[in-house]
Length: 302
Length: 291
Image (cartoon, each protein chain N blue to C red):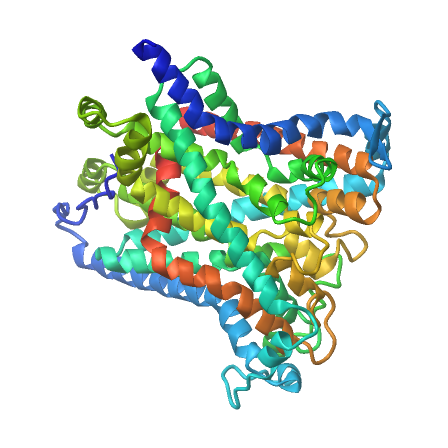
C-alpha cells in the first residue's frame, strides 16, 4: 500500500489554443521564474539562521559585535568550542546523556510500539477497539497539559533525577502505535498462515515476519523518535536537577551566554548550539527519505 | 486451549507492555490534569480545594493576557504557516524531476530538525538591539533600529516570524505528497477548459487539498498552542507580559512560584482551549468543503 505517489503527467495534454498562445506561454514563463526566485529566497532565509549560528561559533568574542557584521569567515577560531568543552560544567557528559537517553527511547520504544501495533492490527481480543480508540484520541491533546500531572506522578514515584524519568514517558507513543498498526494492516495474511503451518511460534511470527516487512515505517519512526527525544527540553528541565544527569538541551542553559547574554558571549552560545544541533542533523541526512515518507504516511493514510 | 483463546492471550501479551506505560504516562496524567485543577499541594500531599484554583485563574489579569497572547500567536502562526507551506509546496511540485523535488523537500525540512533551544539562541542574537543582523540590515537602508524583543508591540510578532522561518518543513512535505497524489485526469479536464497556472492552483489544487490542509492546520495549531521554548529563551513573557503564553504561565506558576494547583488550572485551560479550537477548525473546514 505504501506506494510512492506517482507524478501526474499533467504537462502532456496541453490544450489546443489558437489565439494568444505565445503571449500566454511568455506570461507563464515569467510567472514561473518569479515564483522560483521567491522559492529560492525563502530557502535561503530558512537556512540562514543555521549558517549564522555555525559562522558565529567560529568567531572571536568581539567579532560577533562588529558592525557591519561579517557575513563570512575571516579568521576562524575554535576558541569558543574550547571554552564550552573546558568549562567547569560536564558538557561531554551531557552530550553522552542525551545520546544514551535518545538511543534507549528509540530502540525500546520501537519494540514496545511495534508489539502493540501488531496486536491492534493482527490479533483479536476483547476491548481491542476501545483501547485503540483511547490511544488515538490522546493524539489530539496538547502534551503540555500533561506536564504537571506527570511531574507530580513521577515525583511521588521517586523517579526524579534518574535516567528512568527521561526514558519511560517517551516509550509509549500513540503516534507510533497508530502508524505501525496502519502499516501492519496491509500485510497479506497468507504470509502469517503459511508460517503458522510451518510451525512458527507467535513471537517468531512477530519478529521474523511482521517486523521485517514494517521496516520503512520503523525506520521513519525511529528517526523521528531519536530527533524528538534529543530535542526534548521542557520535560527534562522540569524533572532533572542533578548536573550529572542533565541532557545537553537543559545543561546548556547553565552555560555562559545562554540565558542572558553579556557582551562577549555570543560565539560561546552559538558553539553550544552547534554541538547540540549536530547529532539530529546527521541522523536527518542519513535517513532523510524515511523522514519524508513517515510524515506522509501519517497524514495521507489517516 | 482453542485457537481464539490463544489468539486473545497473545493479543494481550503483545499489547500489555505498551499499555502499562501508556496508562501511567499518558492516560493517568490526562485524567489527572482535570482533577488536579481542584487540588492544592502541601508538602507532597494533595488537599481538595474545589473551584478555588479555577476561580483565582478566572480572576487573574495575567491569565487573560496569556489567553489573548496565545490565541493571537496561534492565529497568526497557523494561518501564515499553512499559507506559506502550501505556496512553497505547490511551487515545488512544478519541478518535473523527482530528485529536484525531494532535494527541495529535504532542504526545507532540515531547519526543523535543529532543536528549538539552539534556534532560539541564534535568534536572540539576530534580534539583538545593537549588533543584531536585522537592525543592521535596516540601518543600511536608513531605517532606525527597532527593539524587536523589547517592545510590547513587536515582541510577539517577532516570535511568529522566527517560528515561521524554521517551522514550515512538516507542512511542506505533507502538501507536496498530497499534490502529487491528486488524480491527473482532473488537471487534464481543466486544461481543456482553459485553466492554467494561477487559475488551476486556486480552483482545482487548493480545494482538492482541503483534507491535507485541515490536517496540517490542526497539527500546527496544537503545536503553536504550546509555545514555550522561544518565550523561555527570548522574552521570559515580557516586555510587560506581551509574550506571556498559557504554556509559559503554567510552567512559571508550577516551577518558579511553586503554586501547583493554580498552574494545573491554567494547564486545564490550555487543554480545553486546544480542543475547542480543533472543533472550530473541523467545523469550519467542513462548511468550506460542502458549500
